[in-house]
Each structure stands twice: as C-alpha cells, then as structure tokens.
Image 1 (cartoon, one colour):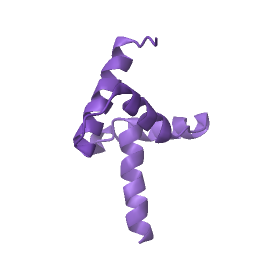
Image 2 (cartoon, one colour; image 1 turned 45 degrees about the vertical axis):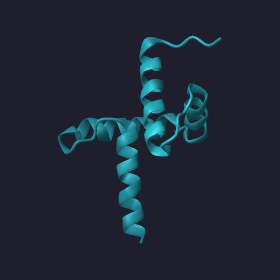
Image 3 (cartoon, helix red, strand yellow; image 1 turned 30 degrees about the vertical axis):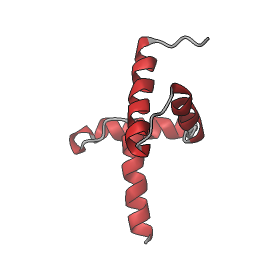
Image 4 (tube, helix red, strand yellow; image 1 turned 90 degrees about the vertical axis):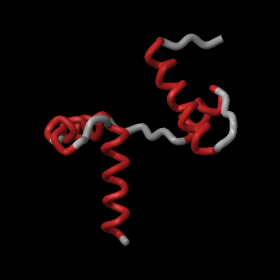
Length: 82
C-alpha cells in the first residue's frame, strides 16, 4: 500500500479528473500514475532554475508554474518552427 501526503493526493485526484474528462471514460489512480510517469520529463537542476527565474520575472504575464510555462513555450516554439 502506498501513502501519499494530502497535497500529493489532491494533485493526483486532479490529474485523475483531467484524464477522465479527456478520455471520456472512467479512470483509476493507477491510470493517473501511469500517465504521470509516461508523460514526465526530468529537467537538469540548472535548466529548472532558469525556468523558475523566468517565472519569477514574468508573473505579470501569467506565468505561474513550471508546467504551464513550459507548455506555453512549447506551443510558441512549434508555431515559430512551422
């Protein structure tokens, strides 16, 4: 049996809800964990520090989390490359 902190459980439950909405089928916590593991990226500490620094300098532009910032920048890069 795994034990999660309340905050980790809350985030996992949010992911479970998001997956259920995306797939339009009932998902399990196992599905959420497998999705999380298969879609995660581990950034080197130096790059993560740069992203966090960028967020801190650009909060007025709506950058709040590493995930949202990287998703937005990925979209900008894809648009620029096409």
